Length: 383
Image (tube, rainbow, N blue to C red; front, side, top):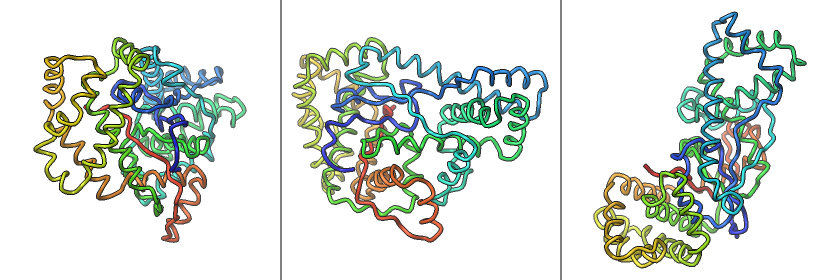
């Protein structure tokens, strides 16, 4: 909900971070509290692994789909381990890993399907919005842990269950349901600012029957816009993340806290300026001059670079006109459409009432008014 969130950690949601493209190094400088990173689902029932040789031996029609899920799950774990090793110098102060417990049994899988379609979007459309690695990991957890336990550890019964599951629904629909198993994680972190790993979800969240009633919308606008500017300015210097850049970020956090704060506050001040209608019309052709004249000193002080190096920095920063145009389009969307308010209100509501209330409201063509708001930022680095 809206308020002083500077003392609250930031919940990276809904995906485990499995690659450098999913996380901008600038996040560790802009956000003043640790990022909470979830880990991929773990299967602790070792006996359920007997399912794999059965599938390979019997070669059922659905076997290829299951092996695809299993391969994606292993890929997810490998990616998460590599990124955590990369950013290890930042662990503790700048990020923490968390392992949340949430239901993934057969009833939970059905409820996740209800939630996914509660905004009126079909499972076919939703299939294009989910992260396949995350969805696969959740389905593997459902099958090899939760369903295995529901079937009293009977591998033959689990084999039969898989046949029924994969025949009943196409794999893309199952992936959507698997992905949405993670949504109840929000109920364990109500009011916590969310760093959204999957920007496609804004379309889903904006279709939910929520009417945002937020009095501090202007303050929210500025913070979200400031983050977009801050990330885009520092991204060429900090992204893509690697071990060397993680060390640099750790050094900046240790010795340049005042400079980081000055740049962050300057971006907040600029956010109020850039969202003015007259300025938004001019910025596409004047963005380089705008950033240089207002942020040159703060950037040079933070990165400790001389005038010559600063010129090279700006040349690299503005080389990709398409990315800056996308940022300005995003800012225009914030000020004109307020989609971030709808998204934040939807997440806040989902944190408290769950999927059934959404479905009931949608069926009755009613909107749930929501004055509480979860601050939502996008966390992926901009290519």
